Picture: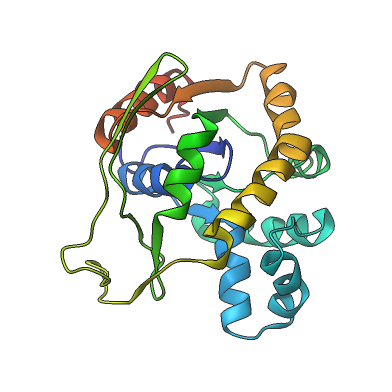
Length: 234
């Protein structure tokens, strides 16, 4: 399958559901770029670019960046050569206007909708650690809970050396938007503005629901199974 896939994929789901983790793993498996507008914005802030100055205040407060800024940033990215044979979107679209703007420039093949209990979300997000150099994701909490009739078995994702990234040796940090008070704001925004996206794409038969309650390997296997009927092979 590697090298032959030409599929446009969106990951949806609340913050903390694992969009970054699973989209990164899927990117490696399918050999196609993973695009995160959040990562693009954070890099722009780090490099003190004009775009970074525009969005830094929104991100700091846990608010969504305005649709026009986000959509224009995404459009420029998917026009780059590495996206011509498919891509994976993580964190975009977040609103109906963003989805409509995306429809004008590309045809999406499948939407993977990650589902997880909100209590687990808060636990996992507040325990998330990110490499300050390469963005690799780790988690310091081992979840074994039963909520809403669902058993959650989600092992921690520790680095080999505490606080140090296995991939590049960078320092693992807790992002400001992974603190509990900001998480709660982000979840409210998700319910208000992003949940309608699931209905938008479901009405077009593009949504595959993924229950995130097991370890990464088992969840990736489930994602690949749900993804298979939608794959475009060239």
